[in-house]
Length: 360
Image (cartoon, one colour):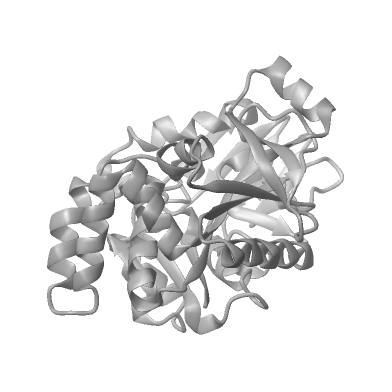
């Protein structure tokens, strides 16, 4: 059976002061219509994964906030991590629980911080990814994005031969993480390389076999947690074991060693979508239509001789005024205000880590 899991444990410090420790970016109404990134990511499974087979893996401390944001999500659909142990364990926890529930389970791994359009193309690619993993549980499927510039902040995946019987799916020939500019430009020019999206489809049993091979201690710990899942010792076992697991990403912990192993194959499914990581103020600005002067506004802004200003206020009646400003970020909340040049906006996380604890 098909399942979908959305990873939603990030802190979103580059979107401070709107994003906070107890209400991070994935729960904020950042998208048009007031939707949160998490709700949008879960809805993205429409037409491919039944509503009752959708899971969210998040920090346990976000449980109440997610239940308030998404009251129709069943309590059992929330997998609460007592502490973050990177993506291989979030995926592994899901795989171990699903394998115990349904030995034939195949699940998608999505993220809660992306804007992906159009939905029809995403659903087509996701269905193809499911069919690939369903046909071979030792096939690990990753989704790649057709690039439109030579990104140095993303991982890249090279398309190999097309997989027979699965039009539009390819063997993954190689992976490169965050290349230098000249190499990224060569990748873009070649037409064979795409951005690595961080989204996957795995057979639960196949993923657990990969964990047993490459991270055996993690696999054993996650299986022990899964054995107690749904019983009276569920939380105690989770709290005891999960923090001890080796912390590593799914890319480094499983995908890279699997690509060099004869026991597994890696497929990539290119998506022709608009794919935006909404993780910083400049990236959020791309989701907002600009006015004639290139200003992008959430809330109220009075701008005089100003261009390229991103103005965000969480207080509807508050008016932000700018005079003679250019390429500036202004974010207002009831207890904190951020002002910085847009070229320094990626460094906002350093402020978020240093302000008084009550404001984090």
